[in-house]
Image (spheres, rainbow, N blue to C red):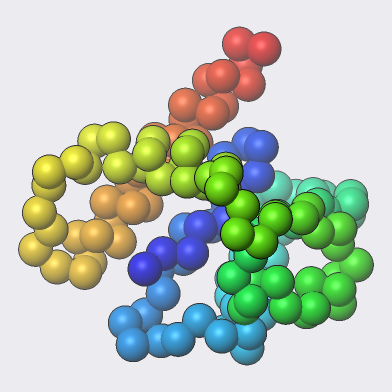
Length: 132
């Protein structure tokens, strides 16, 4: 399983969750604090100085109050909404485009393919931003 963080400029962190690890509130907070925030500081300098509007699906772990610690606004995601989350119709379909039908030999192959897919997606998003 991968946890994917993105903004309007593309994927900021594709995090492969280690096998057998349960994503609970503690784990989610650790990923945000130890992985995502440093990735933002490195790849999007200054972004955390602005108001962050954080959107995550309605999984209880993701809606934990810990984002309040960072004073971020949380974009509501309706519980049991029949609509798809943005990642369901944009991110995941684009990432799977070139991997459909491919059988991976190892977990490392999956992680590599995911990183490669996020780089391709980021290039595509960057291209679209420059065209606007």
